Image (cartoon, rainbow, N blue to C red):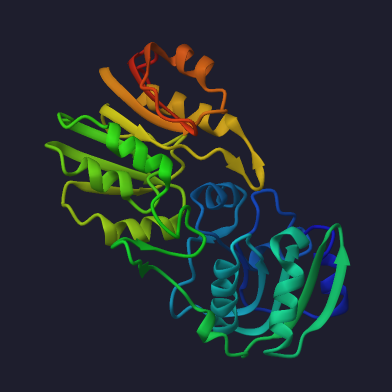
Length: 326
């Protein structure tokens, strides 16, 4: 974005005052071309909001229903339906210019073609393997607006949420492996739309803490997990600190940062689980079989048990965390 946004702003004109929404920017997005004191970051990701808030920006998981913006910059996401829903919000809650930016790999070309069928588009400018273009607000994209929806399987999901089309097979495998005798307080790290938490709550547990970075996923989880023992936390699971130690942690950790595989995310989840567990607590984890988590598990837990899994996924139970402080 940093390469393209100054070019777009030189070719058009922002309103002289009023808030500017920047929707779904990457955590490393260069926003220096915008007037900093007018920018509001809109992102469903707790990690992104925390990053920009620490740098003095106003942030929100989603715009308030009655919020109005003088202009908006929409950063396209990989999920086409999610990007369309984002544009529907921008068009309906902006009074002026709506700028759309994205990489070609994020569907910038196809989105440009779709929008040209609906409204007059200015630009585009192509640079750094992406495109930026803009239009005046007011175009009716209400048919693109989407939120949590009830799926045929009985669960609520939404565009852009992990495993939005159905139950993730790795999570299903882990759910089958969980013991019936689970008790106490459990943390579900990276809880998504609540599939694992719903299964855990069929046991005689005291509470389940759903910790999820993606606000829309957590909204879906509120639909899917209505047990009063459930507690919901919009937070980065790798730094979330419970008020007391957990008896168990369950997780199917993410392993992508953007399009790139990033096993360090899973290793950070493992370290977080060890920090939050009671000395007698246990971690139950599923992961793609090729991911190199063995050293991280051995470094954080005194006992690691391979539960076999299947050809695609490994199942692990880890006991006796070595680091119980923090």
